[in-house]
Length: 257
Image (cartoon, rainbow, N blue to C red; front, side, top):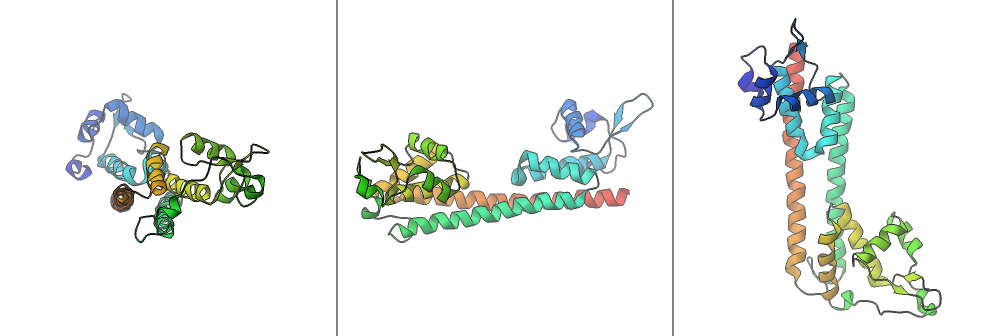
């Protein structure tokens, strides 16, 4: 958008707003948030903008899909304050998170393969659900809620929330009443944890785990993983597009300086 305005040295707020499909109030809000550099003022106190401000908006909107609003705002604010090293650090964090999410997806695919069937499937034996109760002797072979929570790096309350959502189905020790997570429960909890890290809500995780339990209908599992792959690829491309627009904005700032 900025290149369309390049021939115009001064822009009114309405010009900048219309050029980006915004309201003039939104433009003022972006300036107040540090997304835009400070506007010049006329003798009567009215704001005037330049093609550099249009470049800033281009960069911000390009950063949004890959980084999200908070990080995109922080990146632009850092650039406009001259703290480019901080902006680059924030960008690096987004790339690191994307890499971590890719590794998480690989872990999910590996976990599904480990359940017994090549690809994303599972065997019926691997998905057998635990019985409603266990003896105290057999409880020693499982994990209690605190131990499993520590192993996953989450809070016991999270496991209880997952239980209410049907993601895990721990048994109860008949003597103490404590939750006991057997081998199948631990598997379900680990898979739920990995999918949560991948950004999936509980409502979407529950059907996946149910498919793992029942060992039927592999297509939903495959569709989930394909969708995850597609979302990661889209984020990767969005980060690339955001970097290109930010580089253009940085060059424009240098030329103006």
